[in-house]
Structure formats: structure tokens, C-alpha cells
Length: 258
Length: 292
Image (cartoon, rainbow over all chains, first blue to last red; front, side, top):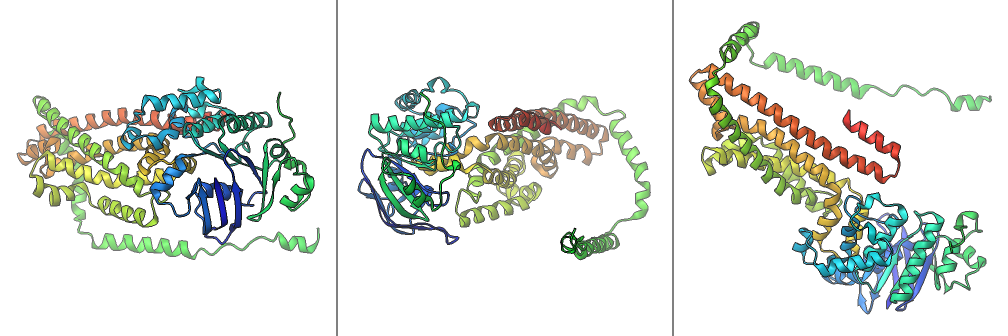
């Protein structure tokens, strides 16, 4: 359902973030992308929803080309792809509910969005998304008053409110403490299994990748260097992906809270 | 300590001061040139204190208290001019400011919008009124209001663009990622981030526009400026004194109220920003810094 063919991204400074990447991700998969900072993980994820345009090759999502989409088509494709960010990217000066309702913008006429007059059925969808991540009691609280873990759950609820087919998560736990990291990762796993949403997660902690990645994709210098199951990915594989011996910084260390 | 280490930490030479010296010289030359060429009768300067006292005595000892009603009426007219002009400027400057921000629109669009705003800002309200709006709308408050409104677009648009350029890009990226249309991105990705600062600018502009409205009255836009113009042309200094007292008191009162509201808005905003860092010490620092 997601297909990269000979996809390359070269940034204006001359940095090659992706080099001739070929990759297929099927519907309902849970894929973890690993690699060092600068290996191209964020670029790969942002190429799927067109936030970063390819300089060569093509990306298709559900058979539609992201690379050749008009702005209108691109918005349609994006509306079916939820995205979760390392720094949450919430609008902190407004309520949790308003942040989650951003997930309904694609289905909301512009005048309604401008006047903040969302349809009752869209508010209902947003509330259900908050219930799924367990923080519906915070709906009318300002986003800035939440802890990091709570803010990331609002981010997940915003993605869920889109009723997406795909969820992209760019280092979703890098700003969180170990126990909270496991809570958020388990939320993502549950969403993938219960709702059948294709989920692609960037991680740099090996242990998290092994626990949650049914399939692991390894990037190094913008190239695909590993594609296999989490069970197969032993220390030797990670040394290959990281291009060096592993250190204590590469693991999160805390075991999942019961 | 070895000799090499000593050399490595040798004191640097004093950087050359040429730029500063040339600049200072240039300023001196300009001042000398201005003093030499400006057409001022220095002899009359000596009489200044005396004539000031004379005018003040005729205006304020005593002012014509019966003229209070007419003066208040004029002042209300000026405030209305400033208020409506500020609303015009605020509403039109908001989209222009967003389009003028380099991080939101393309380099070409933001460049053009910025230049348009610069051009508008370069023309003072009085010139706009006399040259553009009096011929179009005739003498009276309408011309003054339009002149204030247009000039406000220039200043508010530039300030808005600068605030928008300082926002956190994360929520904008998030809004684009959900498939929002450009106006929706502006409403939910940008506006909540910048609204406190921008509303504070609007209030500040309103304070400035009250002064501008008073001046515009002198060139025929009515209001308290018109009242002053009338009394002075008939040399009724006692009436003019009353009008000036009304201007002073009203301006101070509005500045006090508006300034208090502005401080509340901005203090709230920065206290909230500090709270977002989850560091109570920082929150206190931010709150006190704003109060000083």
C-alpha cells in the first residue's frame, strides 16, 4: 500500500538523505525504522505524506502517486495519513480538544474551521479519539498544562481523529522518560492491532525496536541496509545498521511496566 | 608552563576602531551642517520662555469651563476616528502580515507584501488625509478615519509579519500533515500562537491613533483637532486651553487603561510560555521581567 521506487532526496545543501530507496509496506503492518541521527529516518517518513518532496523516484500510497499529486490530491492523501511527532507539535495556547479537532480539518468546510464551528459529529469523533488514549478528562484543558506523556497522547488522538489508514510516528518517544515511552509505544501497538492501521515508527532505541517492531527496516546514510523481522535483528544486525559497536546509549534500559 | 602555551594565550591586538571613528565624524559633520543651514532666528529663542508663559496664562488661567461640553464632544469624535481606523487597520493587516512572513509564504510573495507595507508606512496620516482621502471623501471624519486605517495597515502588518516569523514551526507542520487547506493552517496552526502579541499591538496602535486623530482634525477631519483649529483661528485661547486640557486628560486615561490591558495580555502569554517549559523558576523570572 506504500511503495518507494528508487526514491532519492537531496537537500539544497547537498545532503543525500535518501538514496535510491526501494521499499514496500503492506496494509496493516507495524514497521519500525531504525538508524542513527541523519540516516534518513525522518526524511523517509515525511516522504510518505509529501512533507518532504522527493528529488528523484516515486512514492505511492494506496496506488496514488504522492510525488505527482496536485496540492488538492496531496491534501486528500494526507487526510488518510495521521502523523505523530517527537516534539508533539501541539498548539500549546489552545485546548486539548481544539488540537484533536485539527484531525477533522480535512472534513470541515473552511468557514466552519475559521469560526471554530466544528460539526457535532466531528467533535464526537475527537472525543472518542481522546477516550481511546485515556485522557478525555483533559479535553478542555490547555495543551500547555499537560505533561510530556499526556501531550504525546493528544498527538496520537489528533492522528486518530483523522480516521486514518496509515499512522506515521517520527521518534514519538524520544522526548519521554522510559516508562512513559512504553505506554506510548503500547498505545501505538494497540491501535495497529485493533484498528488495523498501518503504522510506521522511527526509533533509535534498539530494545524498543526489537519489542515493538514486527518488521524492522534499517537505514544507514540514506540507504536501506536491513529489512527483516524484529526477532531476526540481533546485535550483529544493529552493528551493521549503526556502523559501530553498540553502547549503553543505544538502549532505553527500562523493562516495560506491567 | 611551556613557551608555546604562553604564546597561545597571548593577548589579542585591539580590533581597529576605524568604523566607529568614521561614523562619529560623519554624525558631527551632519550636525554642524544642519545648525549652519537651518533657518532659525536665534534671537527669538531668547524670548521663548516669556512667550510660553504668556500663552499658558491666556489658555489656562482660567480656561473657559463652559467650553467643556463642546471639547468633550470633539474628543469623542477623535476617539471614534481612532477606534474605527484601528479596526480597519487590524482586520486588513492580519492577512497581509501572514503573507508577509517569510516562513509562511514564498520568498517572492513575502518580499512584495513587505515592500507594499513599507510604502504604506512611509506616508504619514496627515499626508494621506490631505492628498488622498480629503479629495475622495471630502472634509470630515471619514477622510481622517480612512487615513488612520490605511497607515495602521502598514505598521500593524509589519509587526504581525515579524511575530509570525517567530512562531514554532511544529504546529504548522502538524496542520499541513492532517491535510488542512492553507486558510485552515493559518487559523489553527498560526493564529493561536500569535494572538496575544498581535492583540497587544492593536491596542498600542489605538493609543497612537488617538494622537494622530487629534492632529488630523487640524487639517479638516473634525474631532478635537477641528475644535482646536476653530478656537485658535478666532484667538480664543481660553477655549483652546479647555480643549487641550480635555486632550491631555483623555489621552492619559486611555493610555493607562489600554496599557494595563496590554500588560495583562502579554504577561499572561509569557507566563504561560514559561509554564510550558515546566520550570516554575523560569515562570517567575518571565513574570517579573515583564513587569519591570
